[in-house]
Figure 1 (cartoon, rainbow, N blue to C red):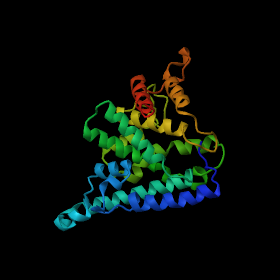
Figure 2 (cartoon, rainbow, N blue to C red):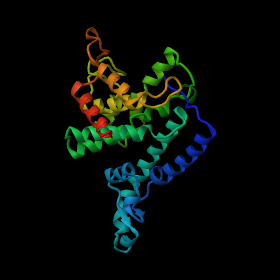
Figure 3 (tube, rainbow, N blue to C red):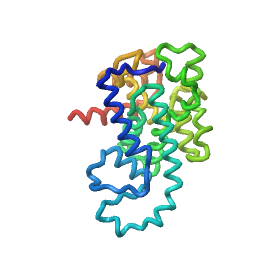
Figure 4 (cartoon, rainbow, N blue to C red):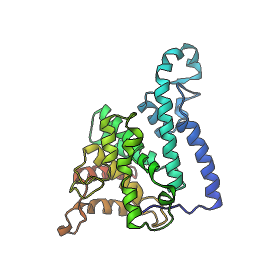
Length: 267
């Protein structure tokens, strides 16, 4: 189910500021990024730039920077920016609030780093997490932004966002990243959607991160759960139904590692 957030006037004004900051700092990427002080950048924004290998230079370094060489990357970054703009449109239609995609990418990256995947694999997981909902762009707005319970037909349409993604990014992202996007709602016991297959480790990581953020975020159909409640829900999704769980949807080791990371922030 999807729906709108309930925003008061103060939150609406804050949203305008958030949108401006996102547009300036992420969705209108430039090459190179010129900053007064790299320390001024938000940690996650800094990580995004580093992942995309966008040159970052300070004002003092401008005179020494080879701008002609940096133009080779400009076409790629322009295209990347256009897809990120689709992401912001999706978030504003579906939730009227920004942040879900960046949070999921952050959670997925942290888990991938924690289990010591290769740097390149982590990068691919991070990018797939950023675009895991890109297929929702092909879902009619009246369905994507419906403020209430979906019909069975509407829910089936929403489910197809996983496979719709390929139509949008097929010429831009590589096959491994697209596979993770297509499979982030697939589950270990093959009960997920839309293909009913066993997902790769990258898709599993994104699925856990996506589920956690959904549980801990305010939605029209439920209030945000506290972290510990979210952890209980994820753990139930690692246990067989006959044992009181919800089925082996997620890899138990990955879920335990994820919880370990999130609890670490409290210490």
